[in-house]
Image 1 (cartoon, one colour):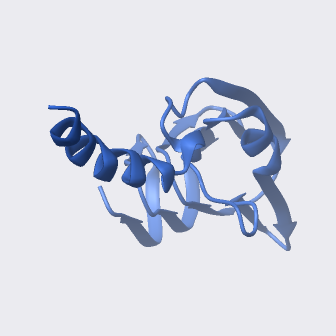
Image 2 (cartoon, rainbow, N blue to C red):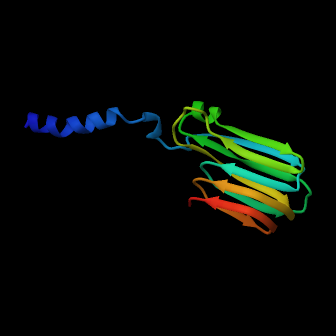
Length: 145
């Protein structure tokens, strides 16, 4: 009986030994809110690798970005960056994954924009994209979900 138990458990233990243990838990155990307000631009692009993007209009002439970063560990969450850059009349927002790091992590965005704005490129490799009440001129919206 012991030999049979060992033969069954040995492959399971070998498999688990190769697992990345930081991915076994919930990815939202470690979160951090972020906010960027009063940003001026006539064009917006957002690039996200994991998480939703919600864009809605409001009666202000500025862009307001808020959201949450999440990861399985605090170290992984803190290594992930939200890059916000203005180039001319364009605002570029990008979630930057830490180089050479794996793990379940991402960011969820809630963005308020002026009603008349050009949404240049809105992408999320793994998350929903919702745009509400915006008079759109758009180049591309992409999501794998």
